[in-house]
Amino acid sequence: MFDLKIVSEFMYEHFSQVTVHAGTEFHARCALCGDSKKNSFKKRFHLDWHNGNPRWHCFNCDSKGGFLRLYTILKHCTLEEAKKDLLGWNPDNHRTRLNRETSFKVKPAKNPIDNFNSHLKDFAGHKFPVDSSLYEQWLKLIDKFISDRHIPKEYQILYAWKGNFQGRLIIPIFDKAKDLIYFQARCLPGSDIQPKYKNPVSEKSNIILNKHKFWPDKYIIITEGLLDAYMIGDQGTTCLGKEIQRPFLMKLLKLTDKTVIVAYDNDQEGLKSMLKFMKSPLKKMVKYFIMPAEYDAKDINILSCDHNIKNMYSFIVKNSYELYVATLKLKIM
Ligand SMILES: [Zn+2]
Image (cartoon, rainbow, N blue to C red):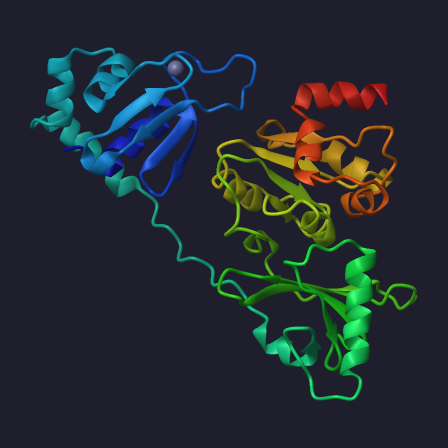
């Protein structure tokens, strides 16, 4: 019987790019064989804690076994020594373990995510009927926007008919519990009301569009805008602007076995932001989407509206590159 905490510490100490699923399944780059040489993001080592009787398998080198065996290989020790360390009484080991435990940082309590449910009384939509003679008219505005911008039917658009955001279309983010965790209030298309977007204030790294929908065996794609992310389906999310913050990225990396792809807008500003990110300490943690030259679209939403791309997720994955290749591609362009 091996304690989850000991197994977890061992994994983080000896493996790189460790992610944990369902609390007890570890995926990492294999420390035994070095994992895939072609793809530095592949994590083919899997260890399942298995209620204290961990089993592991590397799908790259095909080695497998129990925890004691893994311990002997990576600690370069005998089975006897491993048993003594892990199962028997060993004063030295006990002491270091205690020290480590007391040095654990106390995790701060989770930030409660702001919710904006109180604004919903100001918004009208198909699921938010309002007793007004203008209701049908507002629905028409919403429907036109949905059809013009190719918005998939699982997402809602609302109209602010009163309150601070009156006269604007509301692009909402609901979480799994159907709480409104964020929204953007944009002016009606064709109007020149400034600013174009009027958004509530919130800690952006807590807002993760589609958090409850991500598939761990797929990439997560970050776009600048909400509508761009809508085009991608379950794997799309947005940093709600140009800046990808470290805590936000770290949260996403934990939710995928693949990696995160950043898909900046295909314009001057977007390119500038991408180049800036390519110099940041986070640069090697992601892949970069580069719009193929033959598709001259400013962003993903326009790409979807102007070109008939059936599967935006695959399209972006196919045109995404690791740092080195992405840098080369940008130089050629
Ligand atoms: Zn391996």
